[in-house]
Image 1: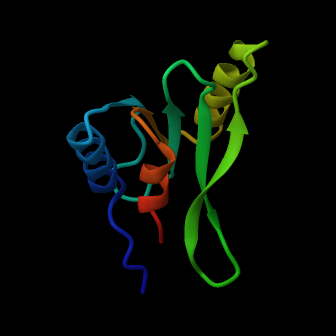
Image 2: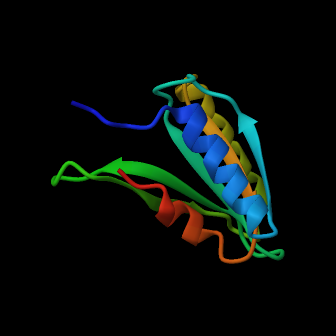
Length: 111
């Protein structure tokens, strides 16, 4: 039995946690309410954006992994990749976090 939290609740909790930490979070693209995939785009003080995607593992866990980092010499390539990723999976949620140490929020979102 899959005890996975519905995507809209997970996204809502993520946004509230970031706001409670003094950051800003927004939904760039809304996905399927219950079972949509969640992608997390992180920003931190003018540094490169990073994309975290949930990946399944052999032990049946699913954790967020860093899959893409913005090249500051060609920042549009990152944005284009995220846009394409959203088009490939219309059920996908894309959430942007602008907060100090944003990777900690991706680490909170597991299983």
